[in-house]
Image (tube, rainbow, N blue to C red; front, side):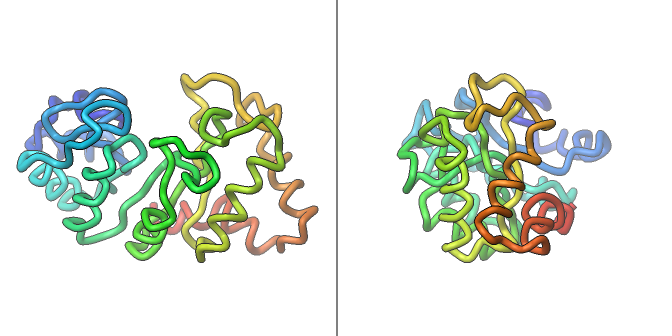
Length: 202
């Protein structure tokens, strides 16, 4: 779920989301709400007291907090308060593409250290360019930060604009595999990135 408005931003409704089978829930999408600011609006506002209560309920019902759209202060509030894994379901490296939707190196390390995962985003605007090389650069940067077990595929295939590397959808993911394999990455590592890392927390 992207944006807790779907359940009224109500900690008492988190159980309903769990009954639906939800495993990732982002307290906010692009618009701020009573739980937190976002990366594009109210960017200096972190989790409210209600947002902290909401996070506790997510953990109680084994739903991972997703920080891909939250404000930077909200991100660090989640990391500080979380007792388990934190995820960024579709975010790239801010060091390579300086967009607030992307993660700083310290943010990536914090998610890695929580036992969570970061999903690679294919949207050209968050990659910083159109080429496969620029997309692969995000993978390699996160691997340099110790992300072998923390990086997975995020996509952002629903509702974004043009994807990088000429991709049109999930059917093109083998092209990314092939590009990484051509750089000498092992099949075991690629299986972790494409499947095992995400599966391990689900």
